[in-house]
Length: 435
Image (cartoon, rainbow, N blue to C red; front, side, top):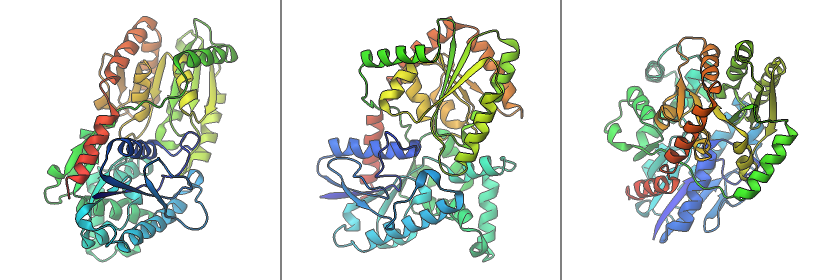
């Protein structure tokens, strides 16, 4: 029998009420799909949370005695947690070479920063597949450095630093960003990325042998989350319309993400201040999500302060939406907005499309490949005035309700072809194909 060991530090938490992001949700859905469909493969999951992620999966909690509070971690606490999880998962596999022979055991890593020691596992003979929910170097560059230099220059600078024997002097968080990602590129038999743009970025940054043929582009698509029936969702939507005074002429916008700096919610609120100056309309914005780790709490305070400055736009913070609430809120919206500074794919964008919503998004490589002009509008931030670009697009789209309705119908049609099940099977085939 073949074995598959799935490593995901965010596994083991109740995802219907825990804001851990899209990568964690993809990992959970992969396990659930494989448990239903992959007969003849022993599935073992390593995580840090207290709950088994899916029936039919052997779950091992790999963490300290105290359950980590992932949602509220600072960058430094997150770095320490990643190292602890790395040691635990590496030890788990190193101590079970006879039970889980490398020749018949595929290792799939759900997030690069939280991977085991991939070099140590490679020396034991394990074939490893990495799922790239985030290009950590690109994320770090955009969020902390403002992308003042291309990411390939950063990776080359780090290589020179290491060659000089100075790598040990770097802060632990930078080792996680640069060394862990470099190891993932070097030791992965297969690198699964959600967009061609990410693949091209990795090829520019790394000169590893045969890298291009080891990278497989697998857009995640969208799955059925269940939840309320269509009738139940409409009943709840009706209640919410009355609660929030949403009338026939109200234009409703929606975002859905964790509330953290890379999601660009502040840019959307600044754009709405500009829209209020020229568009005479009753506007309502739902900012759906909760603050998450790495500056989420302080950023949420900034977002609420900006929302308080709007005069003709009601801003509602419903919190984290599980599957049932999400269905109802999608029914309220006329337009879904994804104003992110960085987005590797955009799961919430595809979810909104499935719900029949047109999408306005910033121009990042993941969303660019998912959206067509007929049902989506992509805005570039290259001018240096992102709020002005967003405001211009909002005015254009909100001023034409009939166009939004047509775009929404086409979005739903496109989403029907974005099947998560096919993507899950591709990943499984890729990982087991290394054996």
